[in-house]
Image (cartoon, rainbow, N blue to C red; front, side, top):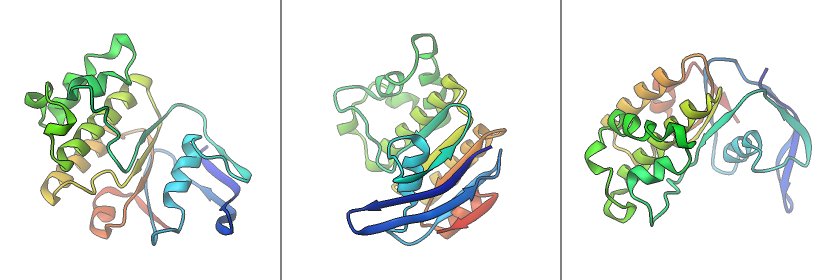
Length: 190
């Protein structure tokens, strides 16, 4: 069971959620859409345990993998080291596997400053997938994961995600309705 139960959250005077509940379909990709400021990222942050609700709770059993909206790469690490940094020592080999998935194996020795915005986001995606496999995460949270990536590459990344997310529950935030249609089993409007 994966659900938000009577969640309330406000920042200062701004109420983001007031007694909000949502049951998330298991082993499906649920796309969360809504205008800016509606709480999409807050919802993922509550699910990940990064933000505490003022009231209510998030219920989920198992490991969680989170891909943030921005790449959050370590500038002093190479591409492969950025992926390895989140993996247990016996799972470091997953870096090569997922760099291959995203077509960046030849860039493994580069530093983030040598990459375009889209390439950084692809590395972040590879790190997310490697962490998902290494920890056997069963809840995947993605916050606008492909916003810096061109349309053709986004379609390829979505296929990789769909294959990697089999038997997993996914909450996927996007503003792009075409992307939502491509990736989602269902769409949740906030």
